[in-house]
Length: 276
Image (cartoon, rainbow, N blue to C red; front, top):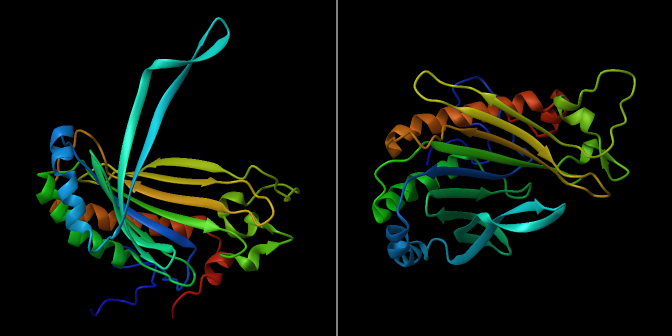
């Protein structure tokens, strides 16, 4: 198709950036939120499943309850207030036993997910192509005329498999990988829990944008840490077309690439195999 090879991390950034052949990115997700009545959603849900079945033959329904624990006379009890059931409908394409790519929909949102590994690196190019193909079809099918913005997420896994050059005795030497763990002072031997969360405002001239970076996970023998980068322009008061959202997707991607470049050390980035 004339585009850059699909293993590049960076594509059409609005800034100069290095491109990596095997970054530790395992999932990229692009989501659009909307306002849709439950009746409209449920009425058209079955026919949507038929519409995507050929491209995404594996389907599943996931339900999640949100509950609230209250206290009375010093004893906890399950409150009847604040209970909420969220249902997610998943449609995936597999490569063997592994998920390759997919679509997830809720009553008020759609998400396009692209999965990758060291053996099968993917790219933002592919994620965007999936969204460009299916987002207009979703909007037409459910009668969605506008969205509340976009949300782009990159999930990185840090483990002895993804960063072998920075592991010893089953432990990851985080101080050598992440700039957030450049600990001042004479004591450098970190111990669990290894986590952080940063939320930043990065508003643009034409739209609001929030940046999120977080690390979660406990480091045990063969442990894995999950480093998430997110850029979001979502706001329930916003109403934009899918065409307008394209610019926001580009800027969100450039912002995540900039975060990736800032959070990973120079030594770590060299190990990800920059393309010449």
